[in-house]
Image (cartoon, rainbow, N blue to C red; front, side, top):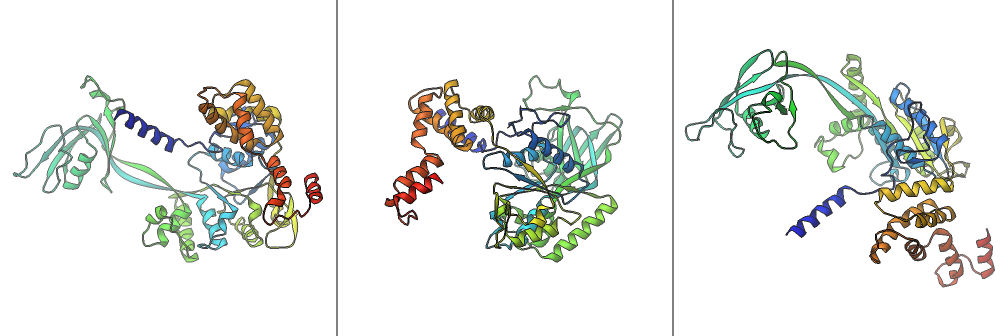
Length: 478
């Protein structure tokens, strides 16, 4: 049984702690003067691009200028998505960050413009402020009166969790450092107190509008009542001043969440089912008007976030025309786009343009370029990935893996880390050695060796487009 329990626990941990391609990124790796450190927060090299991203980060945090667009352009495997993830990590949870791939917009369920509109509104936050009446104090005593058919419970304990609150009444005594008051309790409030397992000595907060009970912790004055307490027990000071207070409560939502709640009969449940569908323009206009009223009254603030569109060259001319117009809106987020294309055709036209982006849209962009990593930088990235994937590798094996990364690609070298670790386990070793790297290098081909193999055996494949051996050799040379 113990073995099964340990196995289930390890499976739960495996599900939670998944390692992604950019899970090692913690931020942009900048110091207080916005200068890029050589290696910091999972970022390596690309100093110029990271400094430029740091300025964009300041622009986003100020939140004063809307509709700016940034293009991350560079060869495949030069850290464009890592830069975007670094910006997202540096912003924190309060600033909305929406990420989509351009190919996701071409769906049968939504039109392209509707999918882009929803992505834009997911990247715009609304911080709604409201004042709530709360009662906050230390519980002195709880007494619950039950009908005669039920056994009474009094004193400083609450009713058992299985008991019903029907026909019950009771009294709750709360105090602060300045005053003490007795409150009459109804059935619903008794249920809420029972659910939170409130007892005398707890410091609680009661929301008068909703009846919600929040346990803030145990009073420091009662810390000596028990010889032993749980590891999660939190001790807080007894509140001072009046018991009844007005407290400002802040809710952070996105415009898209407000759209969905107001456009579907199932309300906020549509957020969990994912069945948002097309949202009518009238609904969005009403919401924008209401949010504008809240801003004038000081009840809400707009938090412009970031919309990251990867593979932007996959957008067509209609999408770029929509983006041109959308960026002129005063509630537009900061748009960050990325591409690894050079001069190529604009999708939906016969015209060629840098990065496959129309010239009028390119003119709106602040362009940040990334450059191929050096051998030393590749070594540092592989060191970080070994730590992230919890793989112990010898120095010679890392030298060989770095050489493979230089000759093939960084992504291929990173993919060999876990494969080599499995090969090491197969021979019952604990440290990945050069023989493990060599073994997986022979088992899994990189792009160059795969292309060479196709050229050698292209006549045995169906529908090959290289009819002769001479043509195959010309293709290899090109």
